Length: 326
Image (cartoon, rainbow, N blue to C red; front, side):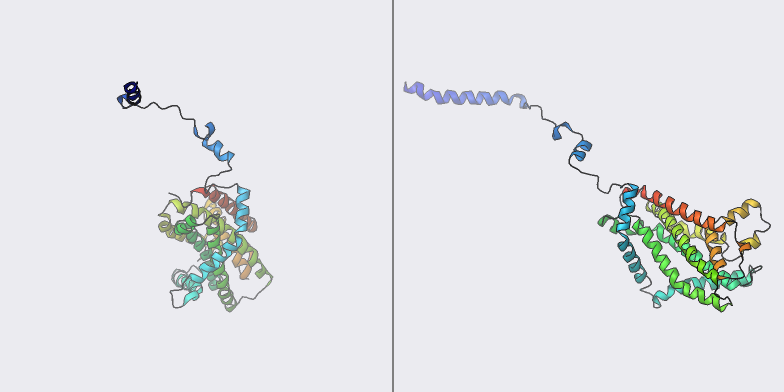
């Protein structure tokens, strides 16, 4: 009985080894079917089940407008900070906001007024020229700032969550603040050239509001294009210079286009930059009469503001989730 009892454990041990050997025969391990993760739900169904959403997903248009309005204090603070930070390295500082358009106007007066004689048909050419330069500079600066609004602030975009349209709008407000500071110089020049304030000067405010809406929409369009087309910022100065020459900044469109083909005259008349420049000249310069304005000028100004403002906003919103990626 003792030997048989002693063989019991050894027989059991051999049986255990045999079992392991059969289990690991040919190095294969039998694995049973694994139940699907999430109970068989698709990723989209799981996200809906637990209330998850894509990070940085584009909200609906109404919700986007609401978010943008809630960030209005951020937009205004950002614009003020940018204005304060500009020209900090220059000795004259903020004075360059006024000196730049003034020096441009002086150069244009020398070339176009004295050398080329484009002042023909314009009574108060100095006020005419300075008004055109200041108003076009507002649009020009808004476009150039808009091109870099996204591509030049990728660190901010990737670090914080906010409606990306805040940036182009803020940069447009920066340019508006600079224009408002320059307006004191513009009005002083207009007064020194013999103009007298009148009821038409009240038209300056609505004209600037419409131009600001137009500029904001155009900045939004350029911000989206500039976020992908990195060379656009290098190309824009040439495009803007051509636009300036076609906008009647240094000459009277009604005078020079009097004998031009009808198609050319219509194209010059509906040019939005020329429309806003002419409205400001009509408001400030008594000799610039309504006969020199294009037909239905206020309707054109309002139409350009609505089309570009709304269209540019929607165009920018369409790519909201792509800014700062890639």
